[in-house]
Length: 128
Image (cartoon, rainbow, N blue to C red):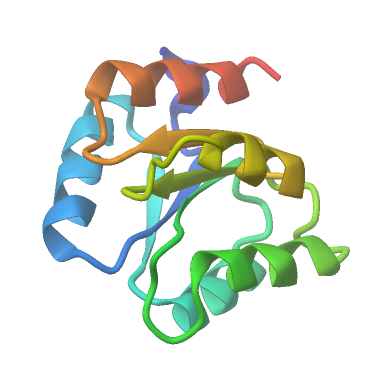
């Protein structure tokens, strides 16, 4: 990743503070403008007010409204429907990835988040 990542907004939706800090630390060298959301309601609000974000990393297991509901709301709004969303989940059961992709998620990352996998996935979206 290079200067292409400077000032690009990435929204991280994660209810676990340790996981949030970990993902942010992994992304720090790339100078993204990181927007944090810790629950589903906050996620919807932050995504709506930052519709110029280039990517959302969305935890599926959230308090309030879960990641699936956040995703549905995001895709129903003209303003946010085209923002790519990567599902981030600890529930990596067989067939789960395929199910999430079939619902329209752009990609999938298993927890615990692997730095190399995260970089590869984000780099794919930087070049779109």
